[in-house]
Image (cartoon, rainbow, N blue to C red):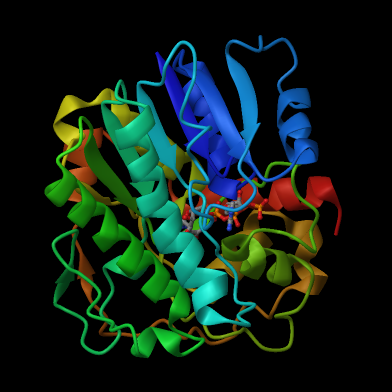
Length: 333
Ligand code: NDP
C-alpha cells in the first residue's frame, strides 16, 4: 500500500514518515530540494527505495505543482498533505501564506482527481487555527467549531496563519463536495505541537515554530520573565503523526475532521517540567515561584472523537517536554 506525503522535511511529517514505515506503507515524500530529500533517505539506512523515496515539489502554490508528483508506479492509495507555511515572518500575507495554503490544497486535490484515480483517501493537516474563534470562545471546543475569520481580517499579519489554515481546510471540503472525486477526505486539527525534533533536518536557529518556546526556555530566554503563553492547548508530535496514519487505516475516519489535543499547558508548566526532568538547566530557568499566566476561566475541550475513532491515547505533557528537551540538547544549545 503506497502513500504520498507532502512537506516531508517538516517537523510533523518527519514523524509521520517513521510511523508509515513502521506500519508497512511504501512512502514517497515531497520535498523542495534534492538536498532535503537526500537527508531524509540517509536518515533511514537499510530502508529500500521501494519503501522510501522522494520527489521534488518546489512550491505548492504553483499551478500544476503536484501534477507529476501524484503519478507513480505502482500507483498511490493514499495522500497525506502536510506542506503549508507555518512561521511568523509575514511579508506578503497572500503570497507567503494564503496562496501556498489554499492553492497548495486545492492544487493537490485537483491533481489527484485528474492523474491519480487509485487514491482512496486524502488526509490534510489542518489546525486548531481552523477551529478557534478568537472573538468569542464557545463553552466547549470540538471539531464542530469553525473559525469565523474573514478574508479581510486575515490580512492582519497576526491572523494570516489562522486564515490560511481555515480557508485551506474549507476549500478542501468544498472541493470534495462539488467535484465528487474517487477519494474521501479527513482532516487532522492539532493545536500547538510539541515534541522531539528530528536531528537530520534541524538546527536550533531554524527549529520549527511550535517548538520555539521550548528552545527559548532551555536557552534561558525566559529566565527573567516568562513570555505570555498565548495559546494554551498542545499535543505531542508523535500523537499527531499517528493520527494521520490512523486516518488512512480506519475506514470510519473518512469525511471527518479530528481535533487532536492532549489538553492545556502554560509556559510556567513547561519551565517547571524542565526543572524537574533536566535539573542541570536550573540556571537557565525562571524561578520556581514565577507566577503563571494560566487563565482561570478559559474553555473546555472535547477530544473524544479522536480517541474513539482513531484510537489515540495522548502522551502526557511531562514526557513530551522531557523528550523534546533531550532532542534540543542533542543538537546543542
Ligand atoms: P514545518 O515548518 O516544520 O513544516 C512545514 C512543511 O511545509 C515543510 O516541509 C516546508 O518545506 C513545507 N512548505 C511550506 N511552504 C511550502 C511551499 N510553498 N511549497 C512547498 N513546501 C512548503 O511545520 P510543521 O511540521 O509544524 O507543520 C506541518 C503542518 O502542520 C502545516 O500544515 C501546519 O500548518 C500544520 N500544523 C502545525 C502545528 C504545529 O504546532 N507545529 C499546529 C497545527 C497545524 P521547507 O521546510 O522546505 O520550507
